[in-house]
Image (cartoon, rainbow, N blue to C red; front, side, top):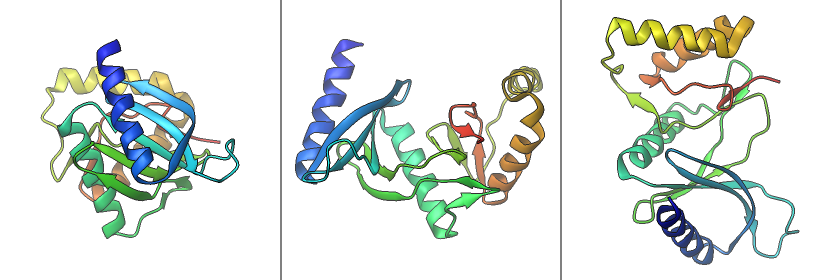
Length: 169
């Protein structure tokens, strides 16, 4: 894990140097990579206006990048009152997305999506998934289902939905 983290940090540093950015704080570290809050060099160092997401693997990076392309194609920056970050820039060599920082309520983190076709999960897996999501979201589960259906109308299938990436006020 330490080797992977060091490699992600190295790529992030190269991206930051290339685009005159400074890191303000780490926002998260997970299965797909690391996310930092960043600002342009010369801005007040504690005011981050963008997030830098460094992906560990190409498939998740390409999926998330392509979801942002799809959202941009349809000019979608919010959905059912949830803000969606705008893609500022991307780097296919470094596997990095630079997106705007959004505040709750928001919908973000599209690395676990599928485009054009839903994932081919068995009925048993789907039942277990829905039971877990009902528990996670409680009384807001119907709202979550509505957001998922709207995404699907754009052929975006989000299976990695959690209260961390679909956050209400």
